[in-house]
Image (cartoon, rainbow, N blue to C red):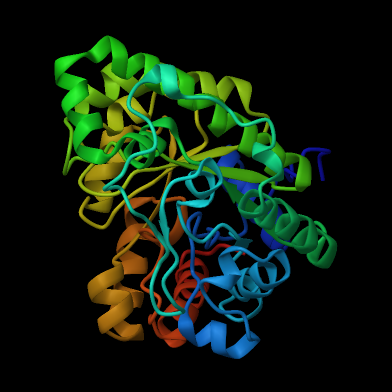
Length: 354
């Protein structure tokens, strides 16, 4: 094995989950495609199993690690993603929070934004020491102690576009992209420091990979907006950050996938609203894809056979890492998640892998 965790040469011998994940992200041979959700597979069922519940499991490192580990120990995925939500940074910055209970996601109340312009953006001196930041970095340390190099640990750090929604409010921020695009760029430049600070802290704690959610979704902005405001910044993240990056954007994103393919990031985590073959064609081999098993219909409401059909559809299209399309619904049944790696194993055997 190479020093960076990649396995060189043939992939015929069985790989560890970490090796499989890192090789796939690097475009190197694998014994089978990995299963790795770079957002979250936390469920109420697993909270009950291990005694780690929302909202505390978002804020307590030991509970967070205990719940995150079920992605590997109970579902058989090849990676563990301990940052379940998208609000740790925003909480640390003083946004008004709604923490909810075990069957609901914590959210940012965006009715009272904390900042109005780029001039207001300041990094608190103790940002990395805030309890909601430390919960994630300490969880990664605990997971690394427990699993070593056996399984990939995927950290997560919000991109500046997502942070802008939280600190400025969605509507004011989006209106500003039209009314004052220079100010929008200044805001994104100021916010990017949080992305790199928290990302590096997670790398230092032991993260092998980083997910950057940056929700410039097709529901809200055009592909040209992605090119105008984010492409260059994402290229810089890819150059500056020392581990593979998985970009995540929800929604219909096929119109911006050709731009995303130019970022230099390792992979793009994509939504089920994009057909796998169309997505593969759009990126044209320039970036790996992670996805795109449907959450609200297939994983939440249907059964293992429908899950298997979607896994095969993604693999037949050439999708390199299989995963749910986003953070899964909290009441998703375990049997549907367990079916994902089983289906991947069966597909790989049918195609002479492993």
